[in-house]
Length: 79
Image (tube, rainbow, N blue to C red):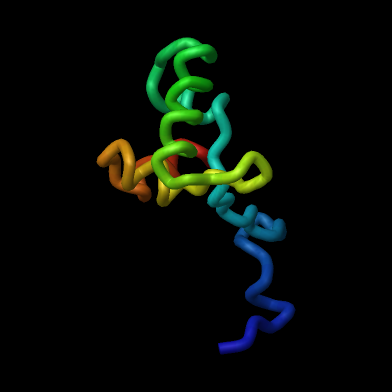
């Protein structure tokens, strides 16, 4: 199915914002209600679990898998 010019925009005449799939420590802080330092530690823990290198990004789905939280819940809170 190809998008035409008419359905690229929502009812307010704006393009819908794409959902992002990368999660950062600040997002983890907001999701968990913990301190930024704790969010950094949790981010590091998840990255080590998935054997991520320094330049690799952490996705919402990896974070959800590690924490047991439904990814849809995380995605709705990132908007």
